[in-house]
Image 1: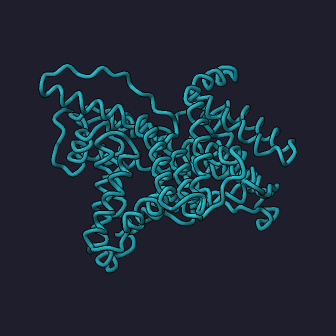
Image 2 (image 1 turned 180 degrees about the vertical axis):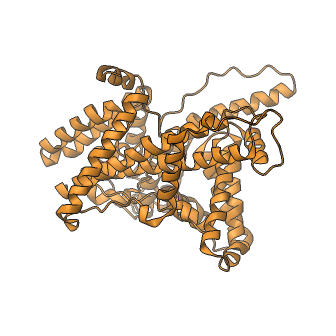
Image 3 (image 1 turned 30 degrees about the horizontal axis):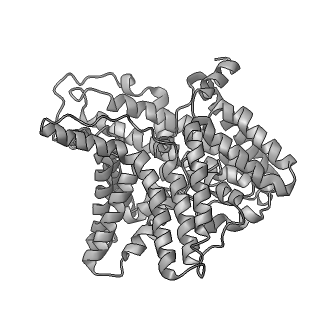
Length: 489
């Protein structure tokens, strides 16, 4: 593929980190503009490029996003303690949160709502409602959560008002974490929006981590995605239990390396511009129970759900029944947040059940078991959950699980050649993914300051940057990019 063709293929799609248009055009332009501009203009530069980044893939939603940010900013002035009576402040908070959640609900759940109504009307042989599918704006869940944290924390008096509409919009739409997180609380970057320090050390560390994230996405996640797609596309008559386990194992690695790779790249880009975002993953597949898993997986979402939903519902301060109820509410809503389909709701209920089981008895039982067995059992539970996540609908997910446990056997010929589902390269990547995932010495945890590395280790990291970027770009040129999985959320 020629370079011109690579750029042309990118111009017809969303702007993504793992694309030629981003790597060779957008990122160099924003870096040059940012570092050549006076310090007082740097927030404006970032905001302009962030709006361009989002508008590239969703131009029709750019104006509503900007208008909603303006409404948030001016309404938030009424949420400051002392701005008006506590009663009116509460009503104002409910109204502005309702405004933002209604936008999220319309774009994300209107299609499901109308589909269910039309299905019910079909039972009574009534003409279904006419409806044109609503297109989901990319990243709407993530920037809505950013807005909620700001509004609620201003109401609670935990943060100061943003200095200007520009600073508030920069927080919401900063391109590095706009589309798929991590979910950044305003309190975490409040000071850095006003004043931050960029350095060559932090920039180099960001470049290293960005390359690692790209390698995770392109060299591991996409390869595992090919295997998972092949398996899940099989006719159920041909799908045997071993192949079903292979498919969900590949998908488990795909979603982890895809999403953690994006988080690495987002955090790395933040470092380049002097921002420090909190970690979003901490070796989640090494968890010893589901409670531990949710402390390690998509940490920013877990923190958001705990701080802005679980605790306001009462957390674990009430009766045992109320604690379990709160857990189930949180994870049912978490499932629904991930997708407007019943299999996502079932995924949330699935994890809610195992979290309740942890509190009820499993945490005590697991203390008597070997650590390796706890990790294995937890990983198996998580993989069953991922079936609900990956399947097209709930019925396919349940059928797939039935094949995994041997309740349903294939009725057609099952002597599929191994290479049809996974080739030699896929096997190598699968083994590499397992090693990186489960063995601590293979963890990829960049150090944010290179002065502690020394010349030899710095040179080694430079070589890793060049090698991983070269391999990733070769892959990108030969196959083209695939969207990050969490873009649809």
